[in-house]
Length: 458
Image (cartoon, rainbow, N blue to C red; front, side, top):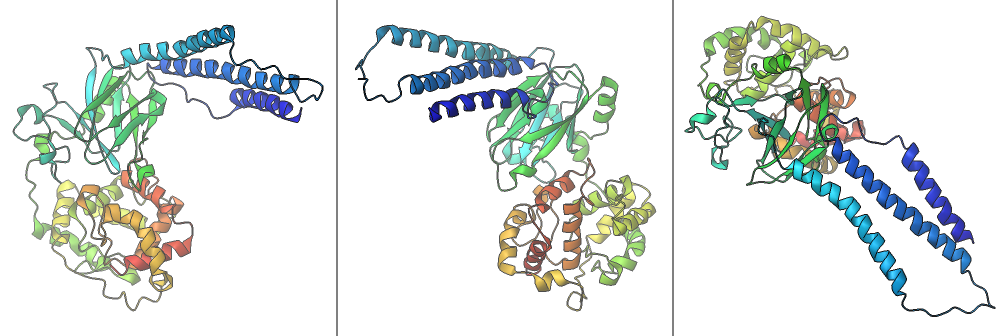
């Protein structure tokens, strides 16, 4: 009797949880509302079966409970019951599968008027490519991948010269326009998912898969990788922004074509040296950094990283938080760089510097490197090494800066800033957002000290 009551309560609790649960679908933002219909139909079919089976079990337990005066009747077969069960089960399976197959038939049939965008996934970021004025994407091949060619575009293919390359973490799409999304992976298996669009598809190395959808409302929607693609899988995020046509065209026009990215950039190192005179007062004549000025070592950092940070300071992406005192100072100092050419020039000069932290050993406030547990820090660094390199050398393909040779107090402060949202909170700071997620793995200050102490040995 007790077991029968428990089964009935289980059924009632499950039904109440299903209808009263706060966890439900987000409002659909594409034409694929039919996918919700198929899921709801599956809930109804499996829900009815769940209720009937468990209620029948409760009835059978109660009806045929033990009675020493009653003898069970042996009945190994019942053709009538078997026929009914086969028919009802078949109807249930058809009711679940047939609508799904019809939706899938539409899912793989792309409208002729659909625009095209390519998504390239790599650990742990997304990149986007649009066809140029010719309306065709250029050929690609893994052999062409490189720092200056992150999409692997064939430089001899004329169709690829006007392809528009999007370095932003946001993918913008026009409202109401069908779009075919081509999916490529540079390394491992990924999965491109936009929950509000009800679409997802694997990115398989070596082949091009696709999905299509029509955005039906403006907004900003999450892009997730729903394939376990590596140790920092959870940090592989992006956004789709659905715009009105005019806003979309304005956004698209702000990015360069492939041909423009291949033009060799020339910098004036002498002009950069003159500009660096302002920087040297804090960062040192050779970029060695100064503890008493709260300035990190910048010698040895990649040009791409330095340019990105200077641009972030100027645009308010970094150094705008009220608690980021030193970031605010840097944001003000970047005002001496009048344009992109000035940033290029000073970056070119910084690349020539070879300074190393001169006062690291005498830094009495560098508690992170003295109080840390190296063995624990090494384990924490396994997460970091995928992007920053096993020896903290930095890796250009991941846009990750060099950590080896950096002041421990500076690394600790940045990790705390990421963890607290002082840094990396801006929606345009793609890499900062990833670092915020990864910094949360370090549960307390001691864990940060352990990690920084180990980095100090690299």
